[in-house]
Length: 248
Image (cartoon, rainbow, N blue to C red; front, side, top):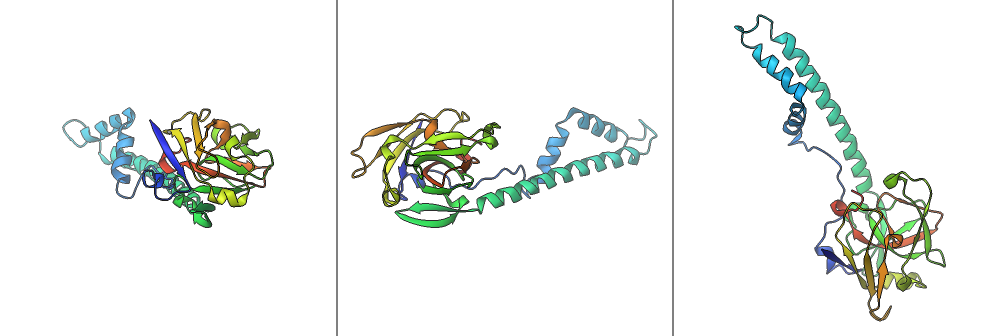
């Protein structure tokens, strides 16, 4: 399956895909109790101790006071549930911080500040040095005359060496004004887990380029959670956002 990302066009591809809101939470207020209990009782040892505790409610089977089993069992479940709730709360805070982070985007030729969660497929996203990449981008411009930029991918693959990324040949030589007005379409595959492969192409609409198709590879992309390093600025077209991020 292919997806078609229309660059800088709010009326086309953005209606088909999700926004950039990210959620790593396991629970909600409504499903926490049943979901957490289901997870705890899916463990064989917990099922065993629950069975023993239930049998002890029958005085004909054992003279032991049921409280001696139910008390520790409930305490263990409560402690485990509290830890899960605490961890999930911190995931919520981390998601909130990332979603509400302000980024620069271009929409219909106008550069504006928005929250990262409001980025849509096809938006042009601008990054400054040391910025975290808010979504998966296809590069179209950098401050380097040769179209290079450097990214840190440690959050994705654990590698601390900086990676080199390059804008496609179709976008070489464009200045600020042209990058704000650029129009075109990116034909790319639906997202998958392989962060080392990206087989796609970009076609810019006239007057930028006369409909020539330019191939794209992973060298032309920067993925969410990477950091822009040793490069004054870079910009790219958002191709995967929110729940459809490659690196999820």
